[in-house]
Length: 358
Image (cartoon, rainbow, N blue to C red):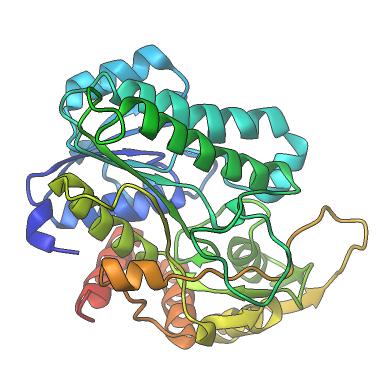
């Protein structure tokens, strides 16, 4: 990632009011990019977007990603060169209750966005975030590469596999170099999972559930799948990769408009209970209670990504080990709970991360 590239660059973030979108908005604001956002209103209080207080510096459109007129108007008004697409229904367990909403947001949303981009002459690069769960998970030990098969047994995972197929079809049908008379924007998809960091308050997600429990009146957090193994990574790690990829796409260089994995190494793999205990210890308050439900909806026990393509072709390498990832996450919440301004803590963590040489 080249910091100078982003100064005065016009960037649209869909889903900017969500966890990953808000972190990217804060980072790009520090790099002096011209940012616009397109998303639904943030859910609940507290939420990271509201705490960052970026409304006065970012032109926002609050609308559904499948609102064709609103998308066209936002692209015409903001004239972005680069689009990061995060707008999605991002929760596995919610997808069991709202499968239609999940497929509409995660699959049709990709098609709606790319159809609008194909009518927007300013755009030169689009990075579409899907998920590590886009792969057909055989619960195998070997990490998944970009050549592996898409699939998914739950609505969320299946929607992300479908999003990958939809993005590839739109890219090959309407964008150069695949369609010679097509739009010049380069389109890529990015896959990451088990992303953690301060400011996430999503429902039915491990870190927010632990934080809510530990900081609540009972100081008690419930863990439902303690033995499931995950490769944990801080949110800034994949975002750095997405930005490096966007720079390559913007240049028009061949060979980057494809799918990319961004995941940590094996040293960051830990069972859920290890992360939970580390958070409680670092926070200095709370206790854990394991409550396993044999009738709970299926969730994968293990899923690893092979990120060697990004390391080889983009020069992207994860820099935070598990203890650093855990410490940054817990420290963000601890400082916020003690009265620190979330925007200040977020910017300080971004500066510390970038000083590691990203």
